[in-house]
Image (cartoon, rainbow, N blue to C red; front, top):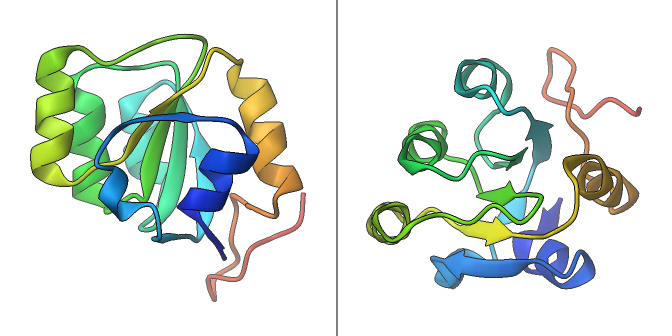
Length: 124
């Protein structure tokens, strides 16, 4: 597992909330813009990559115990979303780059998405 801080540094992400949790390890990753898909596919300690930047993203991330959320393509959370993320301890990160580029970067850093029944990451 890689600490979130290394992902932030290597992918040049801007942390916009809860930067005190950057030492948390990332167990895997998930990318989707549909909240219902993220709720089904993302797992505890995963990082979620999405275009979405509204309040419900924080709710999903908090509910699932995600390590953080990367908001792509220049999307930024509003003040209400940032305040909720701070109160819930959810790390939000933003980047002008595309979801595809960020997912590729995560993969090159060893972050995997799918796991087998034992929780072992599957290679792409």
